Amino acid sequence: MVSKKQKNDPPPSESSGTKRTSPMHNKSHTSLFDLRTTHGQVLFLFITIAISSLIQLLPSELIKNSLTVFNTKSINNCANQTEDKIKLKSKPIYWTFGKSSSSDHLRHVHLVLDRLGFELGSNETDWDLLWAHDYPFRILYPKLHQLKAHQRVNHFPGCGFITNKVDLATSRLKYIPRAFKLPKDKDDFFDFSNEHPQKLFVQKNNQHRHIYIRSVNEIDFDNNDTFIQEYIANPLLVDGHKFDIGVYVIITSVDPLRVYIYKGDVLFRYCPAKYYPFDAKILDKYIVGDDYLPTWDVPSLAQYYTGLGFGMKDSFDAYMSSKGRDTENIWIQVEDAIRTAILAKEKYIADILKQFKSKNNFFEMMRFDLVIDDTLKVHLLEANMSPNLSSAHFLQNTLLYEQVIYNLLNLVGVGSTLHRESMRKRSSATESMITSLKNVVVEPEICSTIPCSESCAPIECELCRPCLSPDDIQDLYAAHREHLSRGDTKRIFPEPIIDKTLDLKNLKLLSPKNQKMTKWFYGKCVQESSWCS
Image (cartoon, rainbow, N blue to C red; front, side):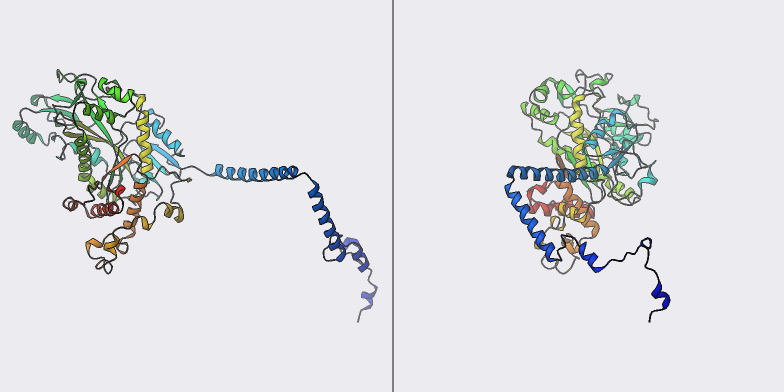
């Protein structure tokens, strides 16, 4: 029942937001293209046929050009959007520690990193790479002992065990001329000099300055800043000039140890004055300084270096060959001298590494300086932690330094052919694309049969997949990536494998992790010969 009030209520006004329409009014305002009606369906069909007929009458080139313009605009819009996104992406960041980063000694480091897509930042940024000219671990220890996984540093903590001049010289290792600390080893020195009265000695400063040949009665035995070392008095000469060689050495891992040398060239530095007639008072006859005589100014070498375009090492080898002397054994000794020195110091570096969150944040590039005597015997003099990479004295060395830096950074994974915003770990799909499990497993015949198929206890089973720890696998992944990225470098430890034969005698002298890594390289060598060296 409707109340009287409801019945007499007036209709709502338009301002109320409600408007009444009759069914006839709705029908008259129905859209002409309403496909729900027969009228709308017929009209839509008619217009579709008309448009199709019109298109058939238009020139085909006009239609093609219209579509091309549309597609080009669409592609350009997409490209611009993509480019804008790329511009927003950051670059990997590096910073430097030590001498002023604007100094010329780091010029080539900056240039190569810039070419690799890095951006110079500071220690306040979330950096990817620290390039330290000075030893950084004393001052920066709070920052460096808890590094993030993607951060890399161009030195190992404890590398001074190799590069400290007095420690290396007095280590009594093969290839190193006998040396004595002062005043501690004074009595040992007298015993040695009495046994070898014909030998000469140099008194060296720990900071590689003020090197002089001294007679026994001229030596200051109470000077704690110096040490005495046997002098190699019969150096090999080229055109009458004594020389030393600098070999660039890269350590990518400690415990297990992996060592490479840059084989693209060797730095040869010749004394400015001819060696004979010898005079110990004329330092330019036997000491290599900053203003050394370069290869291209040595007449017998210039024809190879300047005239034919060879590097320093190849020019020297060609010269020696022209004199009927084979240099192969020289380079075998050089590799062995470097390997011997680093192996002797590895355990000390490994102990210091235990203070840090991870051993995988570090790498090292140093230059080992050696001399060759006239019997072609090699003598190791020292290792330089931050070798000179400046072409300030000799512009011609630019290419050598930049190739050393480039090959170093590629080998250790800082350089990359893949685009990345930082050195953070890439996606698992990207990582697997580079290195996966199938790339590191070895010895299928051993691992698939008893006893290895049932147990990891036998030592011969340690490289089988079930017997590898996560750390083992990461070490092998890193070794595999280094092999792919080695460029113009050569692995000298684990030692190159000759005739696919494993040297079991020397293997037993290595640490357990170095034994495992050596056996892994042997397993890869058996599979494919490029892994042998």
